[in-house]
Amino acid sequence: MKKWQFFTANEIKPFGWTKQQLIIQANGLSGNLDKVWRDVRDSAWIGGDAEGWERVPYWLDGFIPLAYLLDDDDMKGRAKKYIDAIISYQKPDGWICPCPDERRARYDTWALLLLSKVLCVYYECSRDERIPEVLYKALYNYYGLLKNGEIKLFDWGKYRWYEGFVAIEFLYKRTNEVWLKDLARILKSQGMDYHTVKELWKRPLNIWKFDTHIVNLVMMLKYEALSCDLLGEEYTDDAEYLYNFLYEYNGMPAGMFTGDEVLSGISPIQGAELCSVVELMYAFEHLFAYTGDKKWAERLELLAFNAFPATLSDDMWAHQYDQMSNQIACQRFLGKPIFRTNFFDSHLFGLEPNYGCCTANFNQGWPKFILSSFMHNGNDIISAIPIPSVLDYEGIHITLTTNYPFENSFKYSIKTSKDFNFTVRIPTFAKSLTVNGKTVQTGELKFEIKSGEEKDIDITFEATPYLEKRPLGLNVAKCGSLLFAVPIKYEKNMLEYERDGVERKFPYCDYEYIPKSDWNYGFSDGELKAEFRGMSDIPFSSQNPPIILKANLGRIDWGFEDGYDTVCAKVPRSKSAISKPESISLYPYGCAKLRMTEMPFIEK
Image (cartoon, rainbow, N blue to C red; front, side, top):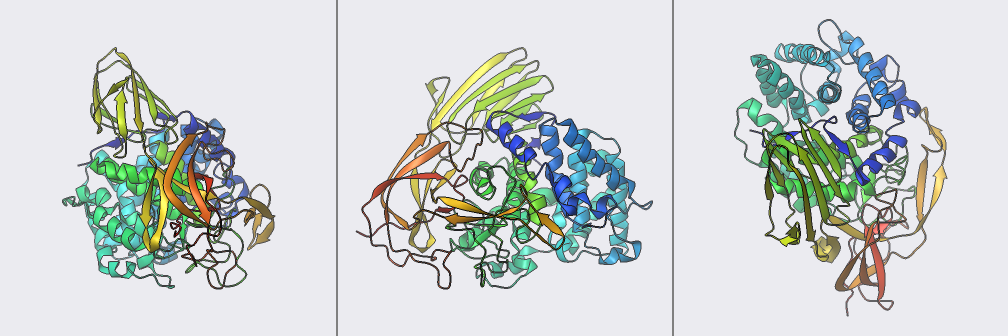
């Protein structure tokens, strides 16, 4: 059974830098897609003639909790407009997706699995009592069509069968009806068993396959946590085995896997699709909630504080499709792209580089991460991800004031009208842990909070910077949950144009990032020193990062990858120094849009 339950966007609110991050998101692309992007503005989901499959549900999946976390009436109203329209087009038999009746068998019902999850998100935020009935009719119709063989899972639906279990569990808790468990069994029986194809993950190929598609694989990691209770199966932590298997052959230092758009090996110049980052975050959120195992929370932090902000512009009007660990330029490829199956513009920052799935889907990242800050189970509450936030739940009020992950001090201010047990998760890297000024052993901290009590809990710990070995004789700098990189200065080349009826114009245009400083570095030694510089209005600012690491680096003859002049070589041509060592400021990976992350030691 699930260890922890999620709070709703009415019970958790952002605070400090997390609130600022959501404000930037709301003022950027996420908060304006329905105004500027045809696939949302004119979608078939609301009676238009544009895309009627995954893009509106993807967008709503993030836009809805964003609106409620910020308590923004305008955004709530716009979300309701879309939900109202979707409900209005539901057929009498329950079918809810925008396609003619005669085409149902050819409509990939991944869109229904996704929409069903979105309807649950909307209900948790709005408490709109129409939603349970709408969802019941949609899933009961789906069950009948699958059971009678009128439709079946194929393509994306086959590979993402477990996504529907969020809604199935939602309805089963309300109704306890047996057909829901039968639907769960049908989905699994028609769905993909990824163990049958895992040998394909060892050796990257330049061939597009569902079996090695990066987003399918990161979604897949949570399948057991979502499905085992409904299926009556034992939880085996299969996710740990599959995660380690994928990471061994395709791992990146920011915690995700290469996939541009299929698995791409361990090269630091292969990319990772943005959809895979936010979906891996979502998988880790559910894995921690189900198991309570801190390894999933620590992996979640690594993604959220590094891989996710790295692929977004400071104002969040632009994003990449693919990010690279060693990313010395983001310029259009004039010849063959470095990516295995993606296109010439996939690493540009823009409206819709490569495909628009990430344009719609990246919006869920920050809202759902913030909703994972506190979790509960009965009379127990845990501070799962210690980011600044406020919990207000059934007479319990907790405010967490912190600049984590940039600083490691935390102030919990608690007021309560009921007894509860409070746990604070402490990361495994924490050293010199103190509580209210007293040194304690590292590990989870547990407190019994009594009704009527007003209590402040001050916690501090230290994190030591260190170098971590990577494949290919390279190394990366880390400190706590942050990864660091050499920032490369750049100038932007703004691109305004129209393609396939999609207009790009400021502020929702595309940008090339053209390097203007050295990038060919290696570590001279292992000395690293952290310096906190203070928070700005942009938490992951590319110009004013909150924290830096000072490292001694020297330039080497690194060279370009064969056939390219905007991609560094996978490994350096030489590790011999061509300059004296100098003290260089390493930026958090999430702040360094152009960067060198994986570097060798200079040979003496």
